[in-house]
Image (cartoon, rainbow, N blue to C red; front, side):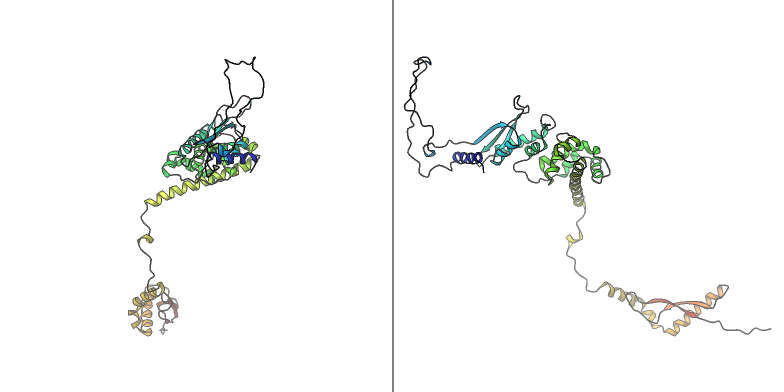
Length: 366
């Protein structure tokens, strides 16, 4: 802590009553200097001589009780270093002059610090200041460096906010969301979404819906609120244009993810409840394999009463009947039937088997 910070810290403690003694000292009559009116003595007739009964230049704090103050303020020419100094001490900006000083070229800034616990009025002043400052960034404050503009745009109690679906649908149409998605996939140029940047920047710096790095926030603020070009940001941030566009593309990807999550959540609310919500799933007593084997056995049980020999004879009779209808008999016949293995595996061993059947030789008569 430097000398200035220490001195202001003691000043705040004094007006807050932290430096007051435990036992109040008796009131001491302050000495006053003997004065004369201007009518009695003029400057030409005044006699220069040591004066008596002058009040002391410094006095003890116990002899001077502090005044009851609601707040303490400061006014100075705005620079990044001075703003950071007063912000560390708890001062909040409430006013910034739009026109710069003719001599110094700086904008006058007023910052306040409250002494009371209830200071909602100061929060409202600061919220109104930030709202106006963001709107004026494309006008009088367009020439502000990215670091200074970004520091002023941040709220003292900034936290991540939430974006509603109604506000998203009000600001962006389905075609706008499609353009953002195309750019996030590197399927379009950044000029295609230039008209959407002011709305995106307002959402981010007023509600803080995304967690962005300092470079990403500066790029979004410069393009969206200060209406600068990529070349301007390249010079001010000392970054190549490709890196500026790469960081900007990551910002758009994060916005697309937020918008998609809002749309998906709205669709999920219209769907019926999931099966898991209706009741807990319980395992069945019989597995799928055993259940299938049991079904196959029940279906095939009537056919198991027939012996293999009868089944073979039935197949041969059926084949002979078919051979009589088809010309060009062949020696190889396909006989389908139940395999000798019986029921096995999961579905049962159904199969087809071939038998070499020779037709009975008939004697040829001359």
